[in-house]
Length: 403
Image 1 (cartoon, helix red, strand yellow):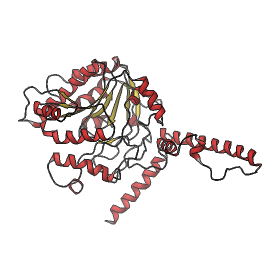
Image 2 (tube, one colour):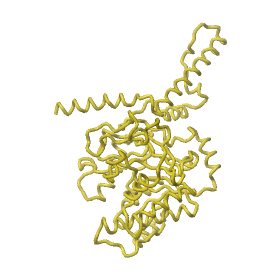
Image 3 (cartoon, helix red, strand yellow):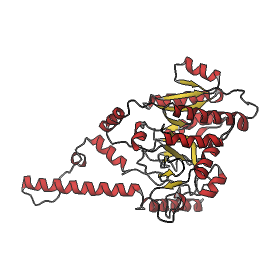
Image 4 (cartoon, helix red, strand yellow):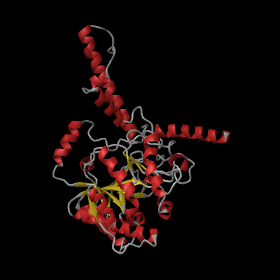
């Protein structure tokens, strides 16, 4: 027991040292904020001294929010964008998804992209119908209006349609219920890929997400159009293991944003080449394309460094947990030399994906969503897979959101 406690303390020390690395984007933003506040402070101090003929260099009871010309709530948002005053179990407080910093910026983006169609698609069959209802209700509560459930059988479609939920039919022909993984599940994954490319061809931008993903806050999706990348991915853990072993990281097929663009469609054509027929594993398919077909040129890497996994001092999850240890944390961007589409992998703090790890490795308040897996029965209670996935929503809110 004592050695376990010592190991936990060592982990905390190492994590703190990692958080202070100055070659990260967050560190640069914090330095910019400090410099800005220092400048503002001195300007106001000088102005105050002129008015009062005082020799004091610092105004009394200085209000940073007034200095920034914003309300206290806007100032708090500004500080949150820099991750100041926050902590994250993965070692980096994300600044992803904090568009503009105020409602005026969001209004301008909404106006700029008012003619763009954006959909959020979660996928369900009759087995996942109870989870689909929980997911849909949560998305509505958070303020989303563009979320739809894709129904893979008539029973699911009719049930959701009768409840006046937004539902899209995508029925599986001859569902292979006798083989839940290599049969039905792979049929669903193949149908999902076919629907994704069809929607993109129709000019719709799409967020593809699993319905057991737990959203923490509302992030206006127009921000991803404004940010400008074609495809956004989340980090996975280690599956497919063979690709992880070769490249040191993998991306998650269960949560990604795709802009409808010619370059994105070229990317999806490569995906469909690797998903032939009515069955495929989309996680394997996406990662084979990502690592073997795209030839990505990553941004900001030193000469001679070809992969984010090879960056010296790259931020990683600091734990001894077999599935979570050493996973990359920080966002990276690049461009495919084959399709010319641009790529961003979100910070792990923004799109959180770990096994277990609750509450010790919960993300910061800037987190967008959690994709927890393999939660202990002590958190969810004993039960079947559906019960545990539904229970995970409350576990997330209680332990990672403080609700």
